[in-house]
Length: 249
Ligand code: MF3
Ligand code: CO
Image (cartoon, rainbow, N blue to C red):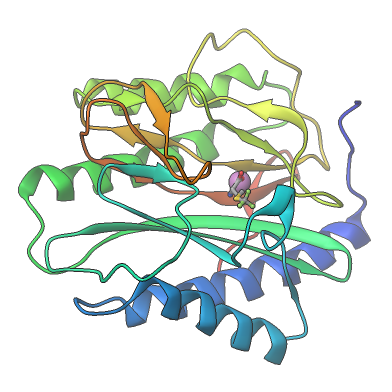
């Protein structure tokens, strides 16, 4: 499938989608505390999305049963919000997507709840920074591999590893469009970034080994070695040659 370039008008709608997604994601972050049950996050999303007349992008996607992914500690991504209670010391990754006027926005954050170990806190900060490096690297005229190389250099320089088996992606009319956006690899690889491209950049960084395994629920992805993992994601558009972050409140 060819990469779809978005028009100025389409990016204006995606900006609204991104803002709404970011606002609701921030609401979820603000209510995280020990004792909160994962499912409550899904309930908040349903209510807040309805209020804002947007549709959950994840619900029903390949049979996914919720509006949001909640992945705790050694869980990397795609955790299904259930009856689990968040406890003091957890690191909680929340991933959210919405569809607004036919366009998708997708973003994620990892949050330290209460007394998190220094290593857990450092993992969160390094993963956030690696996303920022990836965003800075995303410019018209460079190859896509430049983004992943910047992310990988940042994470590995701190002794962490970058997940290989899950990657970022083009986004817009569909949640997953071409191209795939790896968080690692050769800077001189991949297609050249162009004005109007919209992609989701989403580094997943592990304290230990990069390998992953999937839970018996067929969704939750966790680190194979049981080490902590963090995840940050923004949807960005290439505008005037640079990355404009669309998923900001
Ligand atoms: N942000 C995730 C992604 O980009 C969302 C997919 S979760 C799913 O792949 F549940 F919808 F599959
Ligand atoms: Co995504």
